[in-house]
Length: 313
Image (cartoon, rainbow, N blue to C red; front, side, top):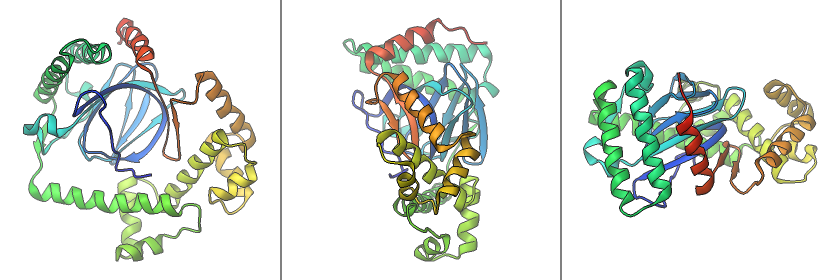
């Protein structure tokens, strides 16, 4: 899987709005601005080296091409997501916000006003009444304009932009390398050799960029892949263990106990119960990089109504 995420916009070119319920999403980046507004449960968000806890009703803006990841805290977290292509507002190209957490820079009233604007947008986006595209794009422009009145930002210099591009290119190579080799005996020195760099340099780059070691990231991919196979196949756990790249069942079991507090057998039951509770597996995206649930237009309208009725403190 290519973690340089490709996002398609089926309705409005350059603009996407949707509800998502997420358990985890591993480190990734994409060329769109991304704003999320949490609804029911807190969400842990890591943006490069900074970590945020978004409580229900709070919003966070992520810059284009900025590495980020999501993890639930307890229950899966549902949020409203707005993704904006730089092509929609070319004058914003190269702008980077320095503080992404809106509630640290804006009054409670200003945040509530932006939440209402966001809900107005997704309501129009879902209903698709005549000229809704103009309404949504216009609202998005006002939304961004308001945020940039409060959030500190700067325009990337050509040197900063080039440095970020080089960093993302190297990171993309690493993520793709792990995706292609995690089932085998994968070694950092082999990847460093491919990149023409020392193992010490690559070890530091990975830890600084992903906030974890090479082996920790590989173990996470193996664990997530095993979880996906537990749900999508009837294979025995020993076969899943071997296919996911674990050297033996003892390490496989230890990984599950460390991450979930359960044995692989117990956790498989929990995962399957969650799939059944969702009612369908068709809209649950479960892979070695994410476990999240998307919604139909009708389901999204129900979520919109619930979101609109909710009072946030």
